Amino acid sequence: MLQEMPVATMDLGVLEPAPSSPLNAGQYDPNIYVVEELPEPTNASLLNASLLFRDNDADVILQSSNMDDFHVHKIILSKASPVFQGMMSLHHDSSVDKKAETKDRVPVIKMVEDTEALSILLRHIYPEPPGPVVNSFESFVGIKRGLELARKFDMPCLRDRLRLILLSRVDEEPEIVFSVGWAYQLKDVIQRAAGSTLSNAVLTGPEEAEFAEISGTALFRLLTYQRDCIAAAVAPLTNFSWIDAVRIPVQSGNQGCSVAGNPVVACNGRSLRPPKWWYDYNAAATAALQIKPEADEVLAPCIIWPALSSAIKCTTCHSRSYSFVDDYCTFLALEVERRIAAVMNFILLLLCDPVLEHRLAHFI
Image 1: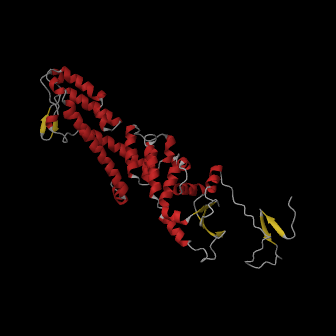
Image 2 (image 1 turned 45 degrees about the vertical axis):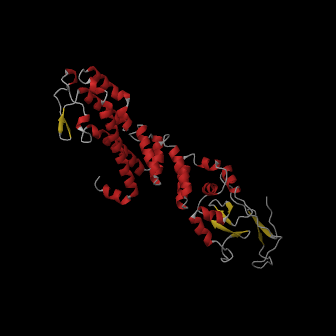
């Protein structure tokens, strides 16, 4: 139990002069010490992060919202970020402003960022080993925090680093990557992630566990993109204005190639009656594209071979069956790819022009 002291009072480790002290304002007495107890960082990693920046030649101190001090250098911060450059210009001479806080005559800048955020930022700026920085970006929460710091402090190099990390994770969790890319307007991330959702055939939305990481706007855009890609992919199989009529096979006199009712296909001003195996191929391609709207689907052997095997059995169609892949299937794949790309270009257009998106909302 602490006893009352006649000369000084003890309060949480701080020794204060007694009221009767003869010291005048601004007078220094080496026998009186002020012991400042700083809050402990929340974990050992944050403590180590703060201790990394204790350079004796530091000319500025960044103080986190946790009251942890980072002893750093104005010139390095100024070169890394124009925002820091502006901050340093306001604190270039602490002796001018007598009210400015200092520690050992080094100016202190109070930051709104916590210790972890400043650690992420400074470890990227300073030539420290890359391990801790990469570890900070293992989770999408850390990646988004880093992107927010990059945006606030105008640091494109940090943004590019995180962009590459996102691209490396596109195949793992494309829905979340799309959401982050959309939030921070990373066009190549959006494009790769959206396309990857088609490859994974997740067309009804991500699993419940992933919803927490996806904003409502991003989720809506992703599902709209998937729906529009399906519609765009199957459209060439219902309207054949995109292909020359000579590339569509027509019925022979063989009964096995005829189609009940002799349906007619309109193609650039011509009326054609394709064989049954051509219809079978289109039906299989349509079903595949509705599950996975990618151009390669129409070239898959499991889609092409049943039609080819039927064509080979027909004595009239046999000679034309081998050119069927080059004359029709390949052109179909190119058209599907073109139309899906057009859907993505429209999504990117909305991203670049929020005003256009707002106007279109009135027509939806």
